[in-house]
Length: 247
Image 1 (cartoon, helix red, strand yellow):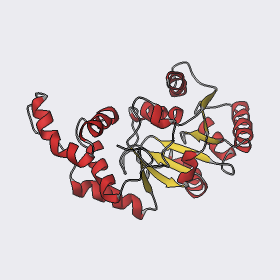
Image 2: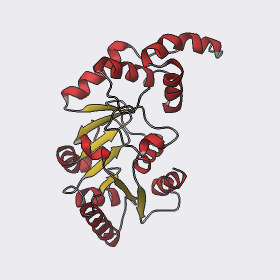
Image 3: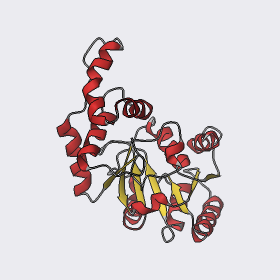
């Protein structure tokens, strides 16, 4: 696989098929591409690999029709798939140990190439914490940084609102077409129009608890640094901070 080489639509559909197939996560995906050179060849080899690995039943491979439907549905909504090999893929995100092979994107994807600072924190933030967040997000934005966060209520919302003018990226835990929480519909619409929204999960995926640590690794992974404002000891925000330190 060659970085900084944009895939064709057909190749992106093959990539979608591979990453949406059973037991294929980001690490396995990249290993298969490195071994076989293309997603199409890897898909052909999957049944044989599963048998050699001791699988007792046939592995579920995402169909071409299903992948094409996801691709076309995203495109019709004005979205775009950005692949690991695309020039617009965030450079720092490429460097984590399990980078998403594909990102579904709404809005201004050129923001993904800019230097980013992640800002995360409590969903039940105090007024003082929100004011501090707004100041950091505004000042960092005016200094040339894009602000990345998770579109949650509280600190995330304050960070996004304060950086709409200078550039903000919302990383969502479910499908890119699912607004969560619902109260952030207007903010979601504003970011879609003026910033960038990205997701790793398939369209229509309702966010679940298991999705958020994976969402958080993307926030920290694409960011030069992560600022945590007011977080509980076992919160997702501190998971993001730990991921940032590891990355």
